[in-house]
Image (cartoon, rainbow, N blue to C red; front, side, top):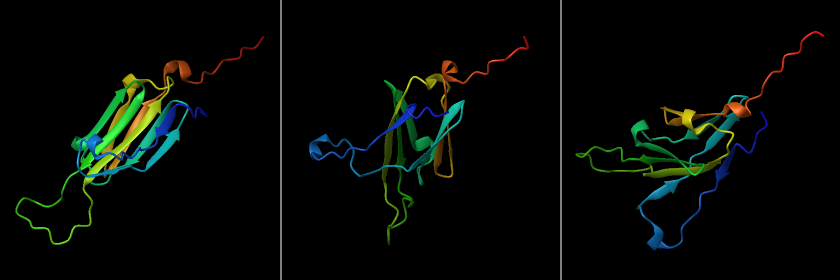
Length: 134
């Protein structure tokens, strides 16, 4: 434990120029809790209103990108009377160190919370050294 450099958050950057926007709508930064054990790092991302099939997780060049789309709730025959749920996209990035084994990452979405299990690479796991009687 104590490997605080294994996962680092990248702050969301706002884009001032409308020419750089590729998607209309709001962009939300999901709240994240991160826990560590000797064997893995667990990341919980709060993404209410996002169905599991609308979540995208991408890993490139040690950058883990989470995104998910909140779609409108109303049906095609319903007319909006009052809308307080905001529609948009969740987006968050993290830089992974070499301490994480990218081939064993697991993701599960339950009740609007994305749980990512980031296993540590074997060479970064603590090892017990047996002591024999001499």
